Length: 431
Image 1 (spheres, rainbow, N blue to C red):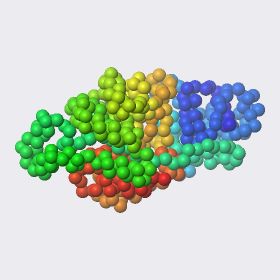
Image 2 (image 1 turned 120 degrees about the vertical axis):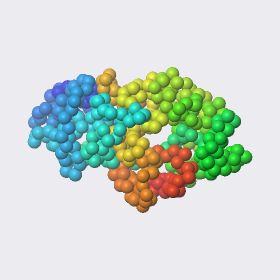
Image 3 (image 1 turned 180 degrees about the horizontal axis):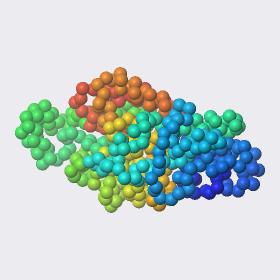
Image 4 (image 1 turned 45 degrees about the vertical axis):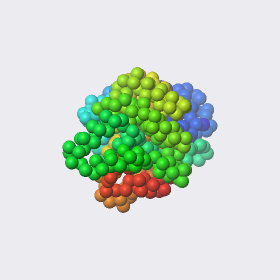
């Protein structure tokens, strides 16, 4: 066991040391404020405080983990060997910055509590983040720091034991529009037909006519192909279905459609099915609970995982609502149009509510990229090369690589064969 001495054991200290050592590195830890217990301990040990006690492994602490609430933090970038870092410490520290405070700052999404300009959907824009501004968005920096810290600890304590999980790959298919034309009801279908006809979108008119005679020809209905790929590569794909009433931003097939219910049941026979939370439910807790309940009644099993429409995560309200609705995991932590790690980690972590100074019982599973972030590429070779860099980095720290694809884009008429690209990514990154 690694014993950590600190002058005060706060909820923040407990939260981040458990995440860094226990969840990322697989190292058992204990905490103490008693100097005599620390000195007696014969195994690996470190001090996390203002001044070292003796000649032990020492990480000089800043004030962030001993404060409460939000205070403007001064960020000055430096480097630790080849990695960017901040919250610099003094020369006696074995690590040249407060790695615990910096990790907490990134994981807790501290900067999202600070004043910032939101985008049209109320989201925190990537350009507002320190990771984007300092060019480390594509790095799971917290994991890289943790692994480098382990290297330094092993120089002092070669006997330190770890029990780490292997690299994992979890593709997600986001189904917010299961069908482009089929199963939408007579009035919605006729309205769409007349609209396309009035705008002279003859290709869509022809597609509507074809699908009206054979719903299986709907371009978004690629579920059999996606399940076949999952079975072939044993990818453990997760499907998130929106199961909501029609609204301005929620235009999926009606949850009352028997064909839609049958589709969901059939997918659930092979893969994990969870809830793609509607735009409306994100701010309406009772609607959120109702969507969860109705989806659960269709698949006849609990719905424990969630993804927010457009990745709309508002800190801390989104996670409070998900906790209240008894979700155990969220897969929305990322940016729709940027490759990278919004919380600078590729390891699932519990949400820490700074306003309440407590760890919430919901685990956040950050995704590395959304397919819409790939639409800007004009070369598949360049696209795959960039994704390779992310993959190699995640694999090196034994993290979890989560890509998000939508059945809409996979079935859309684009210059890139997205379904073919999706298979290449599964084949390339699935261990």
